[in-house]
Amino acid sequence: AQTVTQSQPEMSVQEAETVTLSCTYDTSESNYYLFWYKQPPSRQMILVIRQEAYKQQNATENRFSVNFQKAAKSFSLKISDSQLGDTAMYFCAFIPPSGYSTLTFGKGTMLLVSP
Amino acid sequence: NAGVMQNPRHLVRRRGQEARLRCSPVKGHSHVYWYRQLPEEGLKFMVYLQKENIIDESGMPKERFSAEFPKEGPSILRIQQVVRGDSAAYFCASTSGQYTGELFFGEGSRLTVL
Image 1 (cartoon, helix red, strand yellow):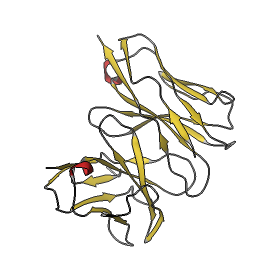
Image 2 (tube, one colour):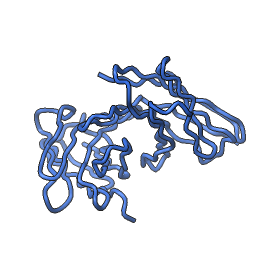
Image 3 (spheres, rainbow over the protein chains, first blue to last red):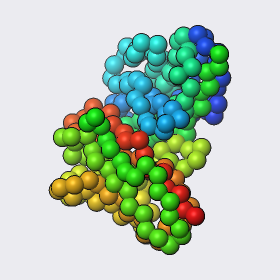
Image 4 (cartoon, rainbow over the protein chains, first blue to last red):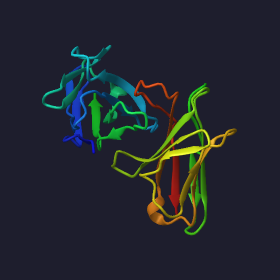
């Protein structure tokens, strides 16, 4: 069974600063996808960034980037130039490439961006 | 908006009543997932359905919970004889089935059991 661990229940950062959210996972699969989802107060789950395990290059989406360390099974999210609108719960998620797979989520990290 | 639509957004039930939550997937998507989110928790997988088939219901309680995804119409998550512990946000997600890993989520249905 796959597990996803987010060891930081809460994080705080000031506007314009950079913050890194941690995620580790456990799997015996060699190929898989990793995701960071954002859940703002509206509660909708919004995909932030996706990483394919067979790609060595770290994914980047504007101010969001990941540090994917496959051997260490680590998948951290870096948010640069933090904005007030980044305040949300952030969930790390994993999915293996089998036909009947579903996402396994971590418990989330609450990020608060302050002025 | 062609995203995943869930209704109702909020539902209040008394203990013992039935709750029905509906999910219309993204147009063209034939795979639907239901997740439950308890306060301060991540999303927990409940059930995975394709049109007219339950593929994986390993995350769904054996009693009182059922799900369907008929050939026509939305997917329904049904909770019979609700108890206070069923109070949670229930999220539906859909995918086309082609493996990209990405699920498209609805805004969730918040069930409160009094």
